[in-house]
Length: 384
Image 1: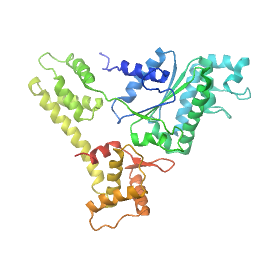
Image 2: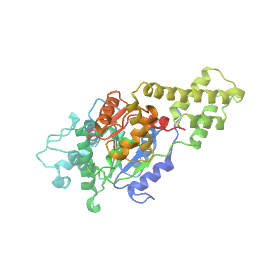
Image 3: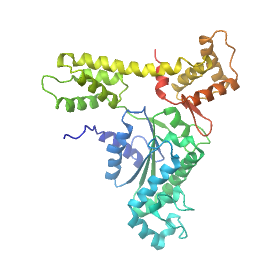
Image 4: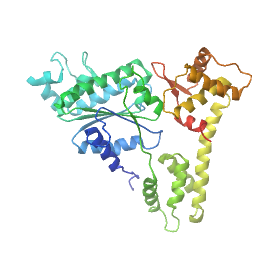
């Protein structure tokens, strides 16, 4: 059986590692925030390229996906990932805890570390655990939190983010220790931005970096791999494949789904391009239809709120629903939808937002910030 196709982005991984080391064009030593739509290859890149690059640099990567269990508290998932990594290095940890230099990691001897529980011992913090991991391995620790915006869903998750900031500051002080690097990814820029845009958030002032989407090089490599499995007289054209890839928003899984549809239709070489394009348009229409079926039945004010949120998402600024300027934008959309409607009050907008949140169209952080649950809806609402 042939191994599945994996497209490696080693050059990108190397540049990000340089940034975390503080020697790249962009300095990511205080934190890296990467955002791109879901299913565009972020998690695959983290696992297949960034983590191996960190290992090659002699670092200790810790990976946690907050999307892996949406019912679990994000703070618990982060804690479990760190404790699991400590368990992987149990011999070094045990040796360190028995040594006279244990005070260097700010962990009191009175704390009993039982790594088999998967939890931190009473009295120990995430900062303690990360300092212990760094000291035990003698390596720079890289904590990678995939879909980090989910941490904002609870006070515990937000507190975990503050704890990670404290750990970063403690480990990076003075440059005497290997240090800690934090990598956060998110499928919603608006949600991830809540970690950096407000003065009360732990990483206020940090920059959000767009994660580069897969491009023509990926499509060419994928097409070559695919054609190697097909008869020479029945190959896909790289340009046709790229056009289909663009239509589905640079999402490799959707491109693979289209290829499977074409295979089921038993297309032949002269018609493969047409089949690819038709199926790509069908996928796009299916996605747009889902948004339309969600949007069309909504009351006019809720529609106007969503349109205002979509508009403001293009400016990359936080959605401030109760400010005069935002209320004016909402009213403008409302007048287009219902010329007889009265200008909405802040109270009515808040009720509309809460209704949209109950319908899982709008997301609200634990501290009251709002964003679209699916960033793709903004793309649909903002389309020409």
